[in-house]
Amino acid sequence: ITPRDRSAFSAVWSPDDSELVANLSQVTRTDMWGPVLVTAESGQIREILEPAKRWTNPTDASADGKTLLYDDQTTGMKMNLGYLRLDGKSERTDYLTTPANETGGRLSADGRFIAYLSDVSGTTEVYVDSFPKPSSARRVATGGAALQLDLRSDGKELFILAADGDRASLFASELRSGAQLETGRPQKLFTLPVEWSGFAPAPKGDRFLLLERVGNRSPSLTLVDNWRAQLAPEK
Image (cartoon, rainbow, N blue to C red; front, side):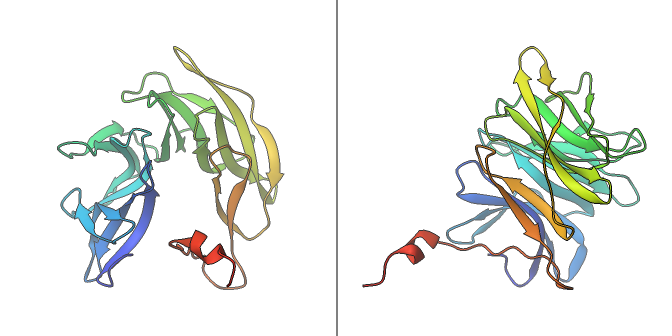
């Protein structure tokens, strides 16, 4: 989908799967990045913000498709959390800017809460807080450094990939949404192969897509369009 004169660094799907929000740079200006909307069917690109010397890496889109979360970084600074609106005038809005690194934000299904990674304690761990304004961040600890997080599509479960001895394991924490977001004690689901490079949960959280490194090759992701047609029986 990405044109040859652009380089893509990260992408998230829109709620209806019709578009991708990606962080792109020009091949000739790798110090300039900008979020864009890419139509999945045609590959048409629409810039959301003007390219700038500022890392704007999308991490999640709200269930209503109106808000985009992103990791934000300017040259020489640590990573912060920001968001912008996709249904009107797009402009960067800071969510959390601290001396620590905060990354990987995910929104709850109702858009009232956020989960993210932070190394404010000296170890990268998962925190949950209110959105769009932080109020009282609470840690969800697994006993090891957190590597990645995601949410079940209905917002009832938080998944955490974390260090577990010399391996990495996937944990699940029950979420209960009320006046505050309550979190259950993380339970280990399984330990990943040694050469892992990430995960993505199915909507119901009953299956997980794992990207596994093979040999010395870098991990890659292939998008197959109209894959159902390829399953049709031969005549």
